[in-house]
Amino acid sequence: MTAKIAFDEVEVGTELPAQSFPVTRATLVRYAGASGDFNPIHWNEKFAKEVGLPDVIAHGMFTMAEAIRVVTDWIGDPGAVEEYGVRFTKPVVVPNDETGALIEVSGKVAAKLDDNRVRVDLTAMSAGQKVLGMSRAVVRLA
Image (cartoon, rainbow, N blue to C red; front, side):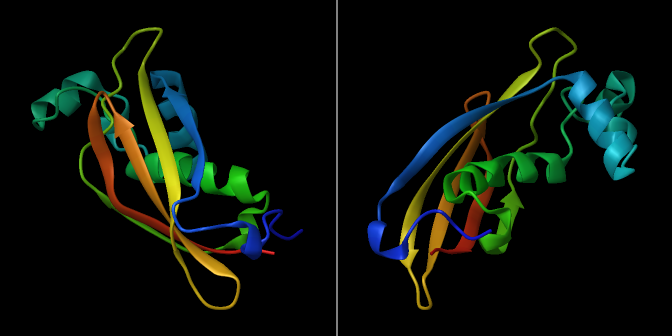
């Protein structure tokens, strides 16, 4: 499978469809099981507060994975992502209720590179705060 977006159809400034990703405590438990990361800051409210956090927080790698979905859904091929990196700036705090937290992600094409590649810059927010900084992906287009 190759990217469904043609390089010639994309301009710098092209905005990707924004998405919101809900996160509940149950989501974190499932992710812990899949990833093997059972650090109690991701499921134990008492422990998280004892170490200075406001509450249980989402796994950083989970947050990073949710953010790149905006890119992979846009291009239609996860294999077209050649590079991806972020800086973790704020945690995603997940309250113990039915709603949990929401990760809101937007992206836009920041540069056209050589060999049918583009750089996409992402913005990931939760509770009005930027949770990922320097979130960038290099993607090969058709």
